[in-house]
Length: 367
Image (cartoon, rainbow, N blue to C red; front, side):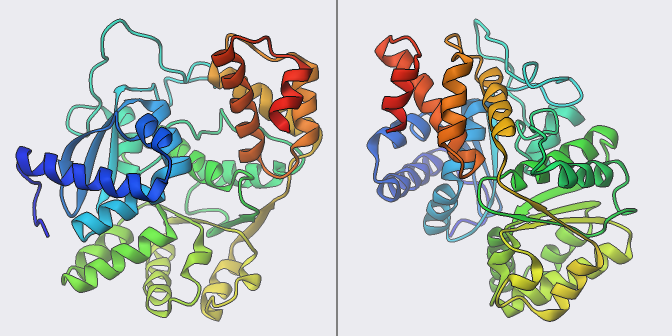
């Protein structure tokens, strides 16, 4: 196992091993060639991996669909769970520069834009690189409806007064309803108002893997300092801590240290704390001391608004008519991820086959 960033020749060899592992896990050559072959590894080490991607959309897509696969491949090859940092060749403006979802799209350029790295970027450019925040998941790009209005308001309040209200804030709901989006949005809002704030986002599974790695390599003090020294800790999918007694104990003490220091903790899960089997009673009690807010499935009007918002973000030249969006919103009622996925597929089919977006084409795609 490497103990420091590797030399160029070794970097190339290791990255090819990572890509081979990713390819075998994906099971789809098309997905691999589209999303992983264009990535260029700039640094590989047990603690940090820097990857250059074509643009910010790659960051969004990999976070949403392939991050677990990439982490697993790195763990297999590097025998470690390093921080993964993406550097878009065409960096996307981040708050406060972006004032609306449309403004958040990177402008086309004739030549590659300057690389955004933690070494040469200002506070705004370092936001998601240092905090592991997805640049697209902000309050501006979140669609508010009856199913999420209360939780959205709670997240806004926390972002305005972190550590002073609703600490901890526990958000729960089904998959694909916007929990992770709100988690990242809180982080961006805090960084926008307080650029010096130490914000860190981490999925619970990764928190567990980092803790195990720190124990195996005698780095428990560094692990604790990392998480107990932040101003805002964002923990995603905390249900993955269920049944892991040592990890729950470490998280319990980390939570207490942050709360005692008036630092903010925001947590998401797929169920309310009392319904997560294998979660220790003391953690449930701590979560119940704060605010517990749920997100439900969006109603029809909210689903239509989400589709309009996604069209704006895609910058689609062939914007579907309202009757097409109504059809999709009426048929796809499960979660936001499925809803947006159907729209993206429809736009792709129309673009690649040079067809007009009609209700009939939408029917074919939905079937």
